[in-house]
Length: 274
Image 1 (spheres, rainbow, N blue to C red):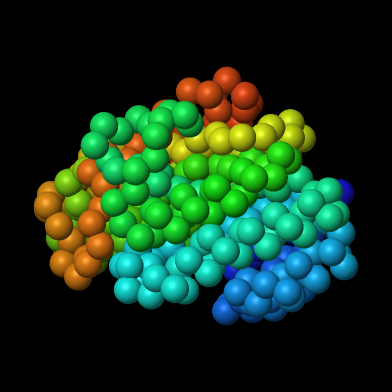
Image 2: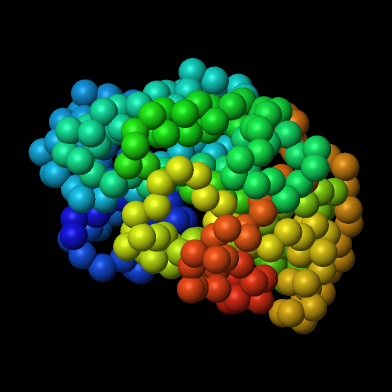
């Protein structure tokens, strides 16, 4: 099976490269990947040409501009990467009849209620969430697409890594007052590996268990016996864009489909790269 991974140098892309079996076609843009192909996803004709020539059986689109504040400032770039590029990936997927797995986010929701189901109405409150929602719409215009909504992916970056490193230095962690469903890149990659065999389509939430960032920080402090302290804050210094208060995802549907434990906190924390 030929599997094309966009964003192969990202956290999820790295883990997919480790977990997946078959003929992997790894695509990167900024950070070089050994054996990979450099491709700017905003060069749409090049993207379509590459996919049509490589003829993958499966495409996993992990590439995304995920910096929430940068998306709000550089809206044109966010739209090109998170939305319009997906349209052209879909166009080429149709030609080669590839199965497309497109990675999306909990930030398509406003965070007013939390534990969002797959069929809940999206209502993004920042441009990152809006650009990702537009990308979902393009992806779902193709019948053979699975949109995976996830939350707080971490590996060598992300909130859990910040917490671990800050507490290890004996410093204070600022934890945003709110909830989400963090998942390690490794567990998400394992879930995707299983889902390829099932060829599900539509939307599926694959994320960790709902937890507040304060409770997560305290859990990491206790689990790894770290010093430092944890402080709950309403806003993180330097943030520009508004964040949803509770963007946690209801993962009950995925738990029924998948055999892998992708959700438990202890299992996910095993795969922090610090």
